[in-house]
Image (cartoon, rainbow, N blue to C red; front, side, top):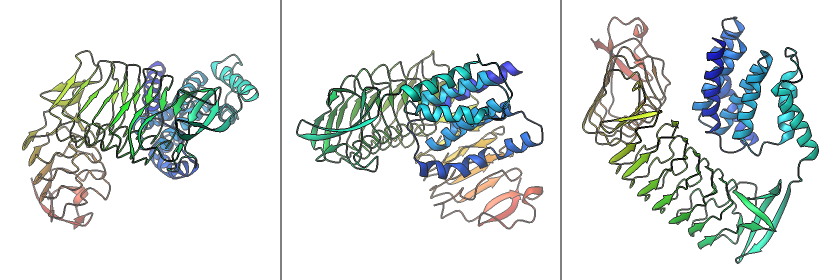
Length: 487
């Protein structure tokens, strides 16, 4: 049981790592704290009651980190899992989690690593000093004593003044006002831009957070060899950007790196990139083609959402996880190819499922009538997002959960029947289903938030079973009148 638990934890940690993109700000962390507390409330109660161990709660935290909605939530959940492992005396597992955090946050200061380990070890069961966690602590202590000095710099090149930060002998392009929409170069760049391979004699390895955000007059960018990371919002909302040349040295494209680049028509992601972050190309509505290389292991939530001109995409064998809504609102998408060697997803009749076919991942451009096959137990969030051609959908008995925003923007959907097996429905699941007039619930009331039907102005009643106990005494469900006649 312990071995199985550790394997599950390691898998969850790996998934969580590849969703992290940049160090959250203090404000982002503050907002995330109550969310994380709520996510783990039931696990904490089970721990308090003695039904679960700290290591089991740590596994749950890592699983939730893999599905967390913000970078701050992910990091808090991973940190929480680390502390729980330490307090349970599971120091080897704690060390694995700490390494996952360090990998996810390459800019995490050694001082922070040292403080996290030392705080977690207070009151923890004593272990031999030779354990891996103590080795990590020794490394962190040495790193705080011998770390390279971090410095800020400015230099002129190509008619621009460039702002950058040097750490460990490498330069990161940074926005002048520390990530608040002020460009890394002055004056704001226009036309074609070639980013220099070195600044102040130091090799450029990273395009930092918000470095070119809102540079709307930028039309093309050449990123030099040596750059390994493109950080959060680096080129977000560069609405004039038509082309970008990415180097073979690139390893990750972070959260919303090219989000809202509405003029971008094509991009070749070089082989060597391992992670495409959430919203990386969200809103690139002119993007017609994209090559996902064999090296990519993880594609984050909504990575290519609203790429309305995207016609085809191929998912290589090495992709181990695909997030929610990756191709939502890709209205022109006609063809998805999945390599036969891929172990994460399967393509059946043009529909994307998990490999075991228990979860419907994405249904691109659904036809008027959709029948979800038996055996599916989960409809993933964003699965039908923007499916305006669908007028009816048949959900089979056996489906237990419908993810958040699963049917958002299905503006032709007129009615839907929820089988009795459904226990959970995510928030905004039916948002902007403007033609939806009839909802029938065949079972007991599922767990659901209040905002299931925003923008469904024609929905006047929800039909529920007359003999269902959980509906008894209710007159409406989130403001929508109930009719007790469902069979």
